[in-house]
Length: 277
Image (cartoon, rainbow, N blue to C red; front, top):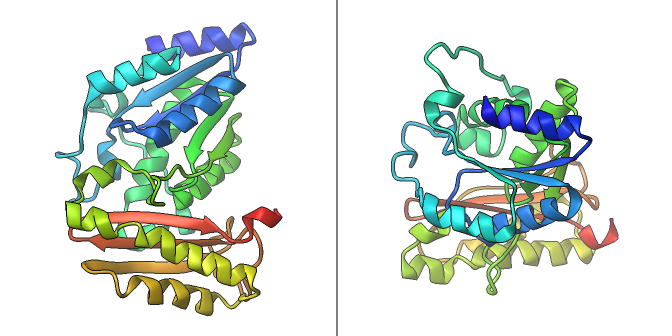
């Protein structure tokens, strides 16, 4: 495969590759990943691949936006060395049989709402790593559970890839930037910043010595429950490696939330005590 051959040639020449996997519909969050990769590596590869195996039967695979020309122009302006945009049959040929079992870390949080999602994510990430041969791969902190699982994948399979977490990029009103924000109706977009407001309120509570996970979660629920049209999927304080709920929250634990505004599902999180780490 041409992408793999080029990547191997770069690595054999002693040149580091930074890799940013995306599903396209690029925005400022992706820009931050590419910019960091550009600073830290001789070459940057960005994949654009809408991965069918990570979508559930009632999710938006068919309607997921695919503005490839705009994405291509955006990446060229950022100075990437290669854009890998394979067709589905190149990643999953007819004889493709193997899947990655993500294990128990895929069961809570997103796993409860999206069964099978992380098996699809890790399978495609493993294949993309093999095709792009990166020394470093860049993932956004917004997709926190995905980040945990990709790190687990790298450890379990002894992959020679360093996973770099990049902070969530936000709109001026605090809403985490996401491709799905474009689906929000104006009334939904107007109330969506309450997600970040609620997380920020709980973070302030933690900084004021509230360490009971249930109390921190209750702060978020209280602040979100008055938001018109918003339904809470989960609010959870978890360890940033095991995803287990701690007896008492400590700096580095993550407070994660998922909500629905109409049919649009949004996730966000905050690292508790980040300023003390």
